[in-house]
Image (cartoon, rainbow over all chains, first blue to last red; front, side, top):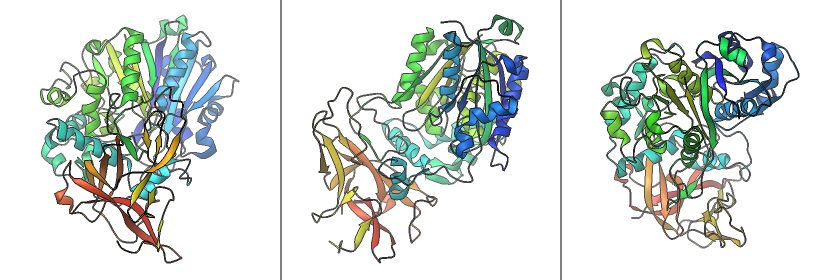
Length: 393
Length: 144
């Protein structure tokens, strides 16, 4: 396998609902990546596209729509969906194509336009699509699942409502410094604790909404492109994991879960991260900056444990002791996280990779983690989807 | 028990009241021992032969393993005639079957919810259909 480098990245800043079509957002991100890498469109030898699930035919063939904007060249264009880890799947395929020598330079992108309101069932077939049952019979929007797990955590460990609020405080402090973030307001612990419960114990400011956004990454093994790139970032590993039998987590869309654990919680993310550690020879202790999926304050805490940055039940202490702050032992989500961005399904995993790359390239201004050499982006998608990307400079 | 004759589940094959008790319709794999809910949502142990899956009913009673209180109305396709927010969602554990099942909490003081409390399976009427039948889902209530 050849060494593969990120040489160009582009983002369309995160925002709320828009009447504009997803391909326009994608084009902004891809244009940005091409300019950043200083490469011509015809150098792109394959496109790995995250699909836009609410975009009908166009959204499901997002790669073809994107290619036609920049000019069709006959290259392989593959469209992929792995829930909120879709971008992880796209960059993994781009990496594999280049590392294996199938192509020299590949583009991974994702673009999503927020639906008005909630993400809901996409079919009416209750036998085939378990999502239908949880919506029609269960009355269970996504945050319910996180709240059920958060309550278990609070009963098992000493996680407090103040801990959950502190996550938002920290994320808002960093989001305010990130030009790509959607939410720029900063909050105090009191303000977060005064926000309404959405699903007890999670409050309005402790869960992330859905957003519009786009992100694109160009990876290459072409020596000429690497040499002319501004601080090329090496991909040490980019992996995906699925769930393991006996995982006790109640997964979004499911109506049941095992009561006797035979696998770690969030086993898909446990698996993805362990694969990445093994492939790269880099462990949690080597990571200088971490982007994790803070879909809710509960995620922020549990992911530190799932990915092996501390033992089970110790994440709260890491947070309280300031270890996860910029300047701390393990800066977490200097981007402001999903808390400051919201979810843009097919784009968010790539946006996390880009934040990591920007940190390694020293481009993060007021939220820069000084001297960051190794970074890790970790994703979480419903129904057992996850990806890990470890990068270095 | 109230008259269940004029009730219909909004989605079939999930909750049964034909025996006089309200019970969830599960399936058990006799090869790997795993219980599934809903029945067709298989979660076999890797390497299982998948032979001998049989339909079973879960016990009426279980223990509350976790809960949350939902404060805003659930969007469609969820539908209730009356406003039910705030409503509880519980994760109820059936110990022998080694499974926890999620469902709406009904007929229970939400302030009294506590992990470990005994819950029983029941139904919740969501709305009345054109045939004047009460359309129900499964639900859990604190054992009184």
